[in-house]
Image (cartoon, rainbow over all chains, first blue to last red; front, top):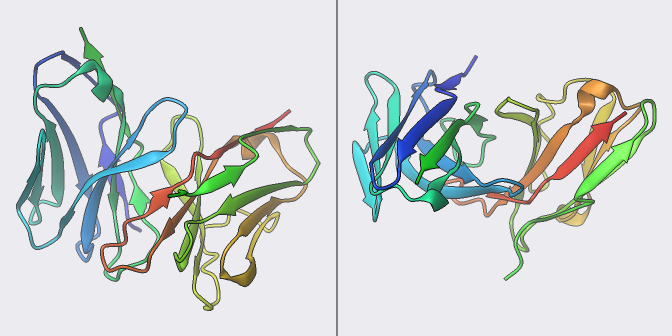
Amino acid sequence: GEDVEQSLFLSVREGDSSVINCTYTDSSSTYLYWYKQEPGAGLQLLTYIFSNMDMKQDQRLTVLLNKKDKHLSLRIADTQTGDSAIYFCAESGANGNTPLVFGKGTRLSVIA
Amino acid sequence: GAGVSQSPSNKVTEKGKDVELRCDPISGHTALYWYRQSLGQGLEFLIYFQGNSAPDKSGLPSDRFSAERTGGSVSTLTIQRTQQEDSAVYLCASSLNGEDNEQFFGPGTRLTVL
């Protein structure tokens, strides 16, 4: 079945860049997503990328997609303490409006 | 504007009791999803409603779990005869039926089964 894998923990110093990696198995995924979950809060969509794109940049966030290797990454430039959260990678199916398949989340800790 | 809301925010129950969790999606969103987030786990899909179509129940872990969506809006997730392994955060999401499938999540209901 579909599977999404990501490392569980990442620790960076404030001001450094963070790179969170994700691999997925469903080659028919149309969209790939990054969600952020702060303590005690629901999931917030950070960004998404369409499967025919290689890169998407949005302010401090850069998403890279290697479709051949089914590898997705999220780079956060100039990481701040407010970026401390759990980041979930998710993939959609081939059609819109299908349930997402999520990874287990990467807990990002930013050290001041 | 109002986002997805869920109630209660916290629920503590005894093993064997039934519980009902409520989700109010964003007005006009035709798709509604329930997920479960257990400690240290990712989000596990439970059930999905899309318009008037029959729901996709393929993620429900057992027949103790059921969900309804009345009038294409509010949804209730019911867990009968709760077990300790049902303890988790239950998240509801809705989407507009747009191609990009952006799902908006509620804050979740934290269920604790003693």
